[in-house]
Image (cartoon, rainbow, N blue to C red; front, side, top):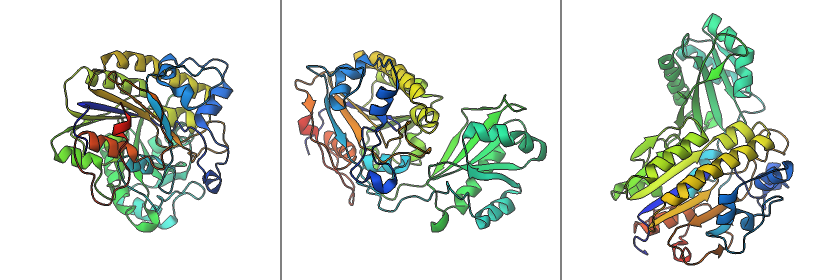
Length: 398
């Protein structure tokens, strides 16, 4: 163990910002994918000066953004050791878990009749929908019927999720959450085991006016084992989550949870946290990149979201202290120029910066995302749980 070097570590996950196809990407139908590179190629302007000075264009060639002679950060790419390309697998691996059995998806078929029948029986609501769909499109299609009848919209996506919509005024938040808890219990069967049940509350009365609210709630599976978050919490360190981190880990190892309304809001929360005193980890997920732009195959929107992030990053960087470490990474790809609407099997960036760093430059490509959790644990002098993967690169971050 290296012992405590940094007092505070900020790990920011730019959800779905892949940095080029994994060697096995073709097995997933993702040969040639490159989220970051293809976004750059798709737009005329791409202004990310703070990511640029940290070394993002050194890590990955970008059409409009030049590499810098002396990047401020250490940078490299991480390959995913686990099987799959979903949110939970990526985040769980970051914190040490090796997932060899992918979560179930029902993108092409909808959920089995037996599952739907049990859900209807136990909730008392007839299910409508039961297909893969955009969350906004399915509201335009079915929300008026749900409001009129009390039926329940159930749908999925390219992720391992079962999502239930409920109008906050007519269906009610408590009823929506109750139905989601039942769905979570039902989908604990191996053949139906999805990673997350998601409550999708909305407001509005007619097509064109429906809007999802920030009262979303995720019912995730418990991680399959103890992670870096558990050992940090056990040793008395702060583990502060921003965005959907607490949902992804089902609260395991979290000491303080902050829900975000958007990726910009998530960065605003992170900036507020950076102005407070704590010892441990601030773990941030910024979901809009994935949910709003990747799945909807919108490279222009994705580029603009990255520019918004860069502005907020410029506000965060001056707040970092000499004994702070910032890690910027991603959990999978979601190439907005690729076919379909699924995540893409890609490497992810790893950018590590501290104001106290004397050196910088490229790190060797890692064979697992788990170097993140292992490095954080090493920094705070705690042992990673038995059965986890990963290795520390703390000694390289000088």
